[in-house]
Image: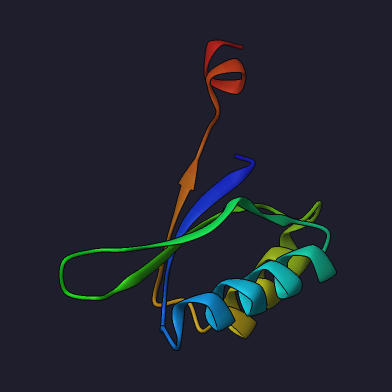
Length: 80
């Protein structure tokens, strides 16, 4: 599964977005849509493209302080 919805601690929104993007890119992944999303209670979520290997993904989730991560498939992978 090449993507994860990740629930993360928040800080100033633009600064946190840039931090997440930098950390994801540094591990070989990415921040999808170059955006972090917030729910009604101010909780932050990021859709990340996974790094190429499981160890890098676990490091990234740890660095982001992820409190929850939901693996997702894209439509092509699901159809295959």
